[in-house]
Length: 337
Image 1: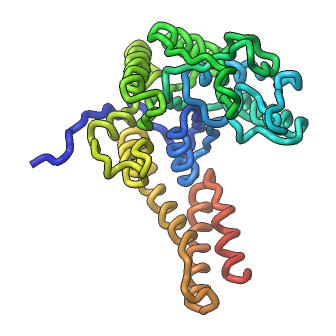
Image 2: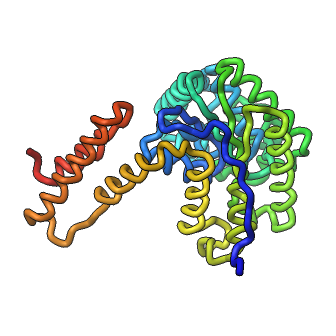
């Protein structure tokens, strides 16, 4: 008897290798994937503008990164004593205008350099809704009608909400992918749709929004040999399909659901030759997170030294691995030697 709806997932024809450079951008679910890959020592750069939900925001970010556009001082605006930018997440905001500007430009330059050498670009889209400035907004260099990536808790009257059409979304993404591939012709693209439901838009409206994203990503994947789709959305909504797999808000997938999706991502998107190495890295990460009842015992020091040696052996065997954080942790916690 089947207790889950079966799903067919096409493996990537040339899966992601542990030595590949992977740039990730998009919704908060992007960060789950990015953090997991970073934990396994993949070379990743994630969300250089911070979390972005809509395809319009993602595309503006990618095009600005590809062009290495410098963020200008006049693009920032002050709201409640904090300096913000309409195209950056609030994690880049700061009470000091110069500090905010420097952080944004530093992130954009790092992303531009990374993108030129990246092997993969992973885009997770969250919503088809766009937010555009009205004439009442403190515009920060933008004109009424221009889209924003983050509302920064500004007054609702500053924005006009709009549901993008399938044609608009497809045109945006096609143009952005052409732009980034002009800088990096060998770049491969993996598209996903976030399983996080935007219930604030309304249940019916959220489904309309997700449907448009799904139509576009499948059209793009079907029309290119270098664009692929991973069904994170379907894995949560149709395979797990149970509120046991959501947090208390009944919107965000919980730890079990996220781990299930990541397990499928590893199975179908990651080079099988890396799986055994990833398992060894996972064991070392678990050892690092271990909280001993008696940290001052010789037994615990032996535990730390043993895992220091395991981490060092992995780094020596695989020259591309950077285990410096783990090595420093085991050395320091053991009292040094």
